[in-house]
Picture (cartoon, rainbow, N blue to C red):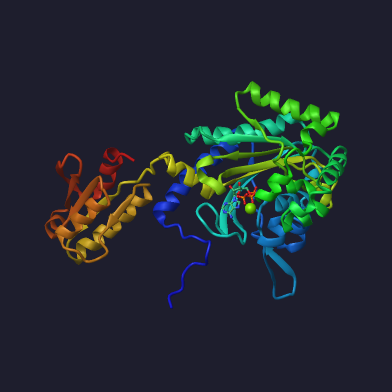
Length: 421
Ligand code: ATP
Ligand code: MG
């Protein structure tokens, strides 16, 4: 039986990676405008990091992690997301010693044992940012603005920002109790997952997609009506900044992150036509996370964008920017001596930064011209035996069909002045 790629993974062939590169380039451009530097962390980490950094009651940790024992018997996990690793690196390199605002971005593969379908894979790619060191609501607004600038520059305008505040360790416990009281006589209407969540993490019941749970939650007290004054003020300021710069949002009191170290702002950016896979970007503030994984209390906020979903969205809207393709100089050679000459010329052109190709399949003159056309060559250089003897090659402009004789040792110079791109 033929071996195929594992379920939920994909190969990207050169034509597709060219599209990825266009997107990656755009992302790097935006990151530099906002002062973010790239961080690269390992693809696997001690399992413990994710247990503490993502939370033992989340779907990611309970159902989706690729965990294995390495040969030394240590439990390792392929990273399901990058925030925990960034925070680990932040601590490991003692960056908290520098009291400035630290801005990181990352781009790379994540691994989750999800149920594969369009827009949902087991290896997928996230671009994300983490901004660590400031509690200022301007930071929350700035990273949202950053995601929007990326989407807008890609031509995507139909995205909807859902915004919420999940409070802080001061106001959330009070709200949590209100939730428990509310659901006390509705337990049997909840799904099994939610029954368990109610004990460990009742906020996440609000996020459940099951019909029964949605029905049970009708009339539930809203977290945003129960925020403390600090959280209220923070949330109002984030909204004020967003309004000021013209970013529309929908308040969504059911949008939760649920874990204790998530604080204040939580947001998702959705593209509705993707259905169950409509969340293109998810983010939030995590002022308690760094302390949770063993560091000094340090505020932070971040988002992650699913790049496969972003690409799907762009394609669906016909917005994938065309990938520019380089045109080669194709050197047609006939006979062994010409071939050697062509090979050397190809190398000279390349070393001057010009794309050049020769025939590698032993084709006839006609066959080689076909190859030149297929590669969309802008020039062909023909070196036959006659040309070799006279020390001249025929240079043909493939656009105008004009053909001139150029001395072999002048071809590089000729191309330098004539070849565009
Ligand atoms: P979902 O609700 O779709 O499962 P999530 O809440 O698990 O998403 P996050 O952990 O917030 O997602 O990750 C941020 C983004 O990464 C998502 O909004 C989505 O775009 C993308 N993403 C998450 N899981 C997958 C996956 N299995 N395949 C492709 N993209 C994914
Ligand atoms: Mg998920």
